[in-house]
Length: 320
Ligand code: UDP
Ligand code: MG
Image 1: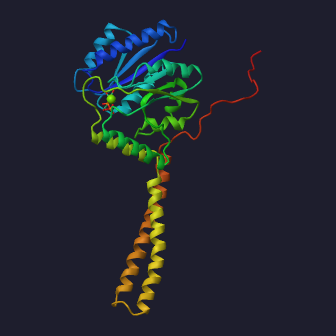
Image 2: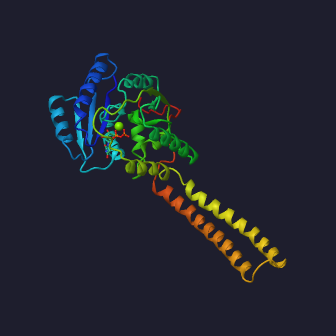
Image 3: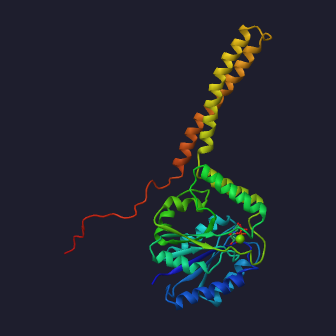
């Protein structure tokens, strides 16, 4: 039977932790009773440098119930890093790992279906919310625009999926090879590949407390999503440079014609030609340098170049 670990990053979540613990406890016990997961399964809370009593609470929970484990970071490192810390720790003990938020926005009843999909052979199961009715108009529309923009930038992500997902131990072993510092996990998992599936769920409102993602953090995160995965912005600079350069050739011809026809004041042709030509050449040069910067950027991330799913070969087992 497979061992499941549920990884839950927590930042100032003292108001929700008791309820989350109660519900996750019921859920896990239920799954164990139905023999869907092993009795070694756990919940791993990751305290992301909380300033309230979150860590004290996690310690109490752990002392009362050995099904709940805790991990505390030295300081606040942000949701994605906290999640990574939890995933990397959990994979040492578990066969399957589910990540979810502490605030009970992710419907924990989707876990059953996720495990089913895993048993059917999927290595990654993405939790996808089936509507954004509960979101504000602003959040719903900015999110939609953002997903569209990411797609346009060539970033492969699962629409309406946040960080509620099931992964196999094997997938996390591959994730470990991604050495990047600016983490945007939901962009990395599709890159890892393997057989995957989707589970739809209703996203609830936060059980208690306030969102730990204020607009500023959100924008920062959104920007990371683009700049950690796409060098298209740099390529755009080069394209604009080429366009301006080509236009400048037309402008030169045009201004020469205007000059020959005698419609200009003296000096105009020279100034107009200089401006266009110089701007074009400069933009082109910046774009060209950018191409190399983009290459350096991709190289420094040391992402794995390929991941093998299966190999078929002769049985080379030499033991007699
Ligand atoms: N979180 C974290 N570190 C942070 C910010 C958030 O570990 O610096 C956790 C938080 O405790 C929660 C999850 O990340 O479990 C998602 O945060 P939140 O629910 O506030 O985001 P929202 O759902 O509003 O986008
Ligand atoms: Mg939330």
